[in-house]
Length: 377
Image (spheres, rainbow, N blue to C red):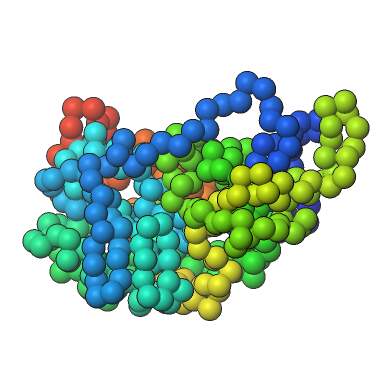
């Protein structure tokens, strides 16, 4: 493990891409594919949501995905660099467990949302965007529970603290804590540079996300990765620096001989004329990073609604939240068998916990497929 990887793990960053096993080749880096590959074909949104619509706020257009038509509103806010589709498998799972309306929104600069200033991503702007979309789409807001992951969790806390939603009835946050989030920011640019900058197809991006450890759930990767990418033409991006290659090593031919360093996607751009790059350049959002997370713990604890914190590891809990949890100010659940993308890696488990939370707050009723989950903390 490299020093960069050790430092990333130490600061609770998402995992860095893994090097490929010796003697094998990765299709997304332009080498010979393995035999007996898993199915990495794209799955579309309509398998998980009932409808998608674009909501206009002035000159800006925000994409929203919705499923269900009765019960409380579960408003889902994705993490930085991801999209509303990261909630797809979770949305289907929780819809089968309880009666609720599930809505997932693409933040500005993400997914299929298009604004006049995509990189104006201060916490206040993002919070007002979400509230504007929510109140425009839902004319009569039902009791609303905010559920946010990572950056989306921080924005959910800001919305709750500002009391922007009059029907807010609950707040749930997934794998984001002020202390560890702020500590991790110094290494975030290194993490972003470590990722491949483009892929020759969405299928190869899906494969990379699984084989690199970014995601552990193939079903979720097959629907969510397309929301993180945009198509770029050969004329716009016809060169990928060697430092962005997914292998970072000399190629190994089928006969075991070393060849020249991988040229990654350059070969495929020449052959096919296009590739797929990240939808949002997260490095450009750095001026807003600290504002997303600063003072988050106190804002979370001061929110008067019932609160739930889901974490991928107990080490992520900072001092202020530890004291608050001991005082019974919120419910906490520690989950194993997952990475930072908790709701994608184990969507059924997260759906069970959120369903139990909604039932305990008397916001919904369970469906026959739901097995009651007892909270661990």
